[in-house]
Length: 236
Image (cartoon, rainbow, N blue to C red; front, side, top):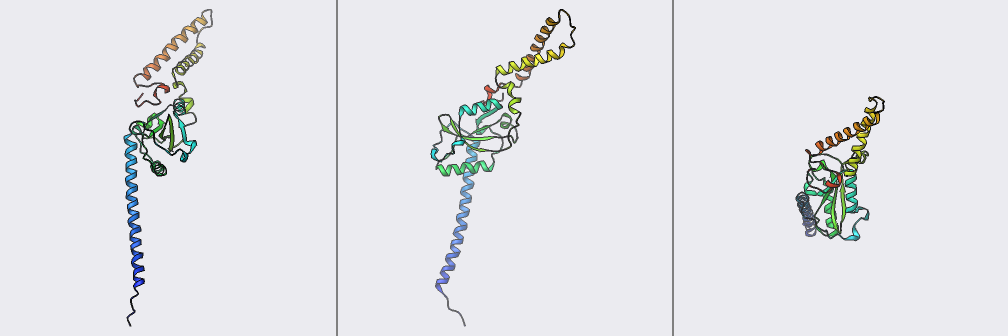
């Protein structure tokens, strides 16, 4: 015998299939929307733009990620880093950074712009994994740290770039290097009445020579001290 058709069951089956199809369509629509948002964020990061004050909801910000420009400048000078618009950053931004930007935009109901990157100079020209940090401006000289990736800087970096922190450090380092070389060469000088005058003349000659080496190394390569380059977009 042929079973009778239960219309209610047919309705349930139809609704179930419809819900599954709607769920798949919603998922696809969400994936497409997410892809468009990621593409928009990447374009904003790569195109840069003028400084803006993003209207964050202050109550939703993590206070330990808010930094003033003075603190950023000090760290950049101490470690010879740059703090530039994201458009000058030549590497690719990681997916995690894009995701954090999306999450911030959704939480604060805004579209972020004016991104900044703190990183070693070479990261704005060459591929390298050293420690970039991505910021968004808040206003009044404050910036919000969105994401940090890559490996940490060498613990010796601050010491290795100390001679280039400013002109005073550079001159003092030049003086100390000249003094050290003079001390090493002084053992070859004859110990007589003219010894101290010979040492002084040797020091002056070496000091002038070291300064000349620094100048001839720095000028052709457009190098400069940390205080002058921390926020410069030029290769110096």
